[in-house]
Amino acid sequence: MIVLGPTPARILVIEDNEDNRDIIVRRLARRGFLLTSAADGFAGLRLAKESLPDLILLDLQMPGMDGYEVLHQLKAYPPTATIPVIVLTAHVLEEHEEQARAAGCTDFEPKPVNFPRLVGKILVCLGHLPPPAERAGD
Image (cartoon, rainbow, N blue to C red; front, side, top):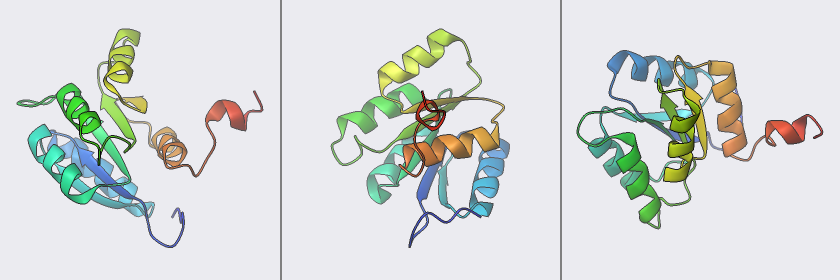
């Protein structure tokens, strides 16, 4: 279990695939994070605005409102604009990562998710670890 301070970090998972969402929520909850989740972009955006989580994990490819639109709206709304967002996607080409970063994501994790790497990215985004290049002494 990861203990980051007096209160666990609150993470919102926005993922339309129920199995993926369940796996992410269960595995991160076992590491001590507090998780909420949404099955689509509309619900995710509403939850983000209501709860102001510490971090958002966001699928890009969802019906209705895709992850790019969720990112755009999160970054345009001042209370959510600074929340770190890690994009989770099966689209792993460099151009997809560039597009997601241009839309405002903080980091990018290809699917299938590598959980140790994802937890490391979460800790970096939350300010509990320096970026990998700094940890390596670069």
